[in-house]
Amino acid sequence: MTSASRSRRRDGELPSATISEFDGVRYLHLGDTPWVQGAMRLRKPRALELDYVQRMMAWLLLRDPAALDDTRVVQLGLGAAALTRFCHGELGLRTTAVELNAQVVAACRQWFRLPADDERLSVQIADAGAWVQDAAHHGSAEVLSVDLYDHEAAAPVLDDDEFYRGCHEVLTEGGVMTVNLFGRNASFSRSARRIEAAFAASGGTVRMLAPTPEGNTIVLAVRAGTFPDEAVLRERAEAVTARCGLKAVRWLGLIQPLPPVRAPRKARAAASVAEPSE
Image (cartoon, rainbow, N blue to C red):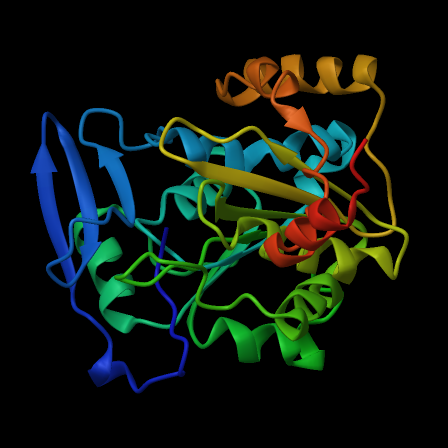
């Protein structure tokens, strides 16, 4: 989870970034809520500590390893900068992070080892919704990672059809989007279908990873492309593990189609009543 704003509030009205530590792990929170926005193990700051954050890197299975070094990555929501540090530092990729809350950026630079901007790293304080609608950013990334939850962590703060269409436009042909959604939240199906609709226009493909024990579900969407076959996915997963240590082979058994659309409860009840008795 990470921060954004439903109402595009001024920075002064955004919750403060707060820090906690437990058992060798440093956590980022917003305000005084217990919800974790990100984490970093102090003895392994370069590693991805949280399971769902590791799964956000499943886009690596959908990129040709030969083209990986030329991949441009955009992240909407900074969190504790884990993905940003990993893509910029471990993979050496051109990385842009868009974060609304300047306090989160400051906390990441002070407490979570987020490096200063350089020729490969740009951290921008901006509203993610406006950013994806800006035509100047369309076609600017091969990978887009979306993790936009506020201090209440009830549902994504940017989650409508227009937002996902904007995300689609940010990607190049064959580009990949990963989105963190709460799989156990009632809004999951609605969010997933909006993503599917946005990518259907280009003949894209949308899949999901099975939820983590905490209920985080990662949705994978490919613009104007399909998923490689099982043999290619496994080969790439092994290459990912060899290059950066992520246990990518485990992701293969988690990839699945989106759940089927269920009729509204009232419609199901009406259909049941309409069935003739024997």
